[in-house]
Image (cartoon, rainbow, N blue to C red):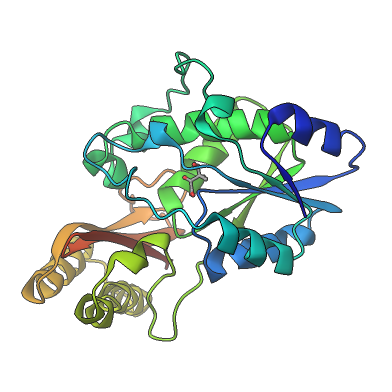
Length: 275
Ligand code: PAF
């Protein structure tokens, strides 16, 4: 695997690449990322990953400084997964001057769910993703479904800017007890780690009830919030939405997803399930 700290170096290396699939990450790679790398191989001859912890998408009180940086380990995992090129810029390379131009996603997509608790997060995310896509110029880019709202916003951005890139979704990878793999799981204490799968269990329960014909969504959501709160969680939301824009479903909307976000101790966990 070639490692490129600069845009020029990466572009030179990819100049003759016939078809490129790209997986952007912020590092601290887990099996979910590695599954995306392997999936990327099905879409292209050349697989490019990036590692860049993007300051723009962190709020002032969020974990930018604390975000785990495990570069050597990540490189070993990427090599093992057969990734061809890693773009690993430092902040000066990505933001040589403070970024003054930003992607401004539709507030109807950003000010809901995760965006409500993280103002500016999706603007910073979309800005760096557009920049990374311009740097790498892939034919396909892969994003995990675990960050469902992120995936929805990227699909809309790529569609509205007519970028010639296939956005491919990767299924969420889970531990045996159902906990969605996430770089932030490492923040959990042993007791919190044992409690953490409850979020996924609540989402699955909702999925089962909806599949069985239950249509009182508010009741299902309220029950799940109460159940989490009773076990020491601080839920932000448990919400059944339509998949296309993550707005509340209208009667007849069939393609639904239930999303949840809740704090366990100091760690905020998110998960979702298409239902
Ligand atoms: O999902 C992530 O890790 C990040 O939001 C992304 C897409 C790499 C942009 O920084």
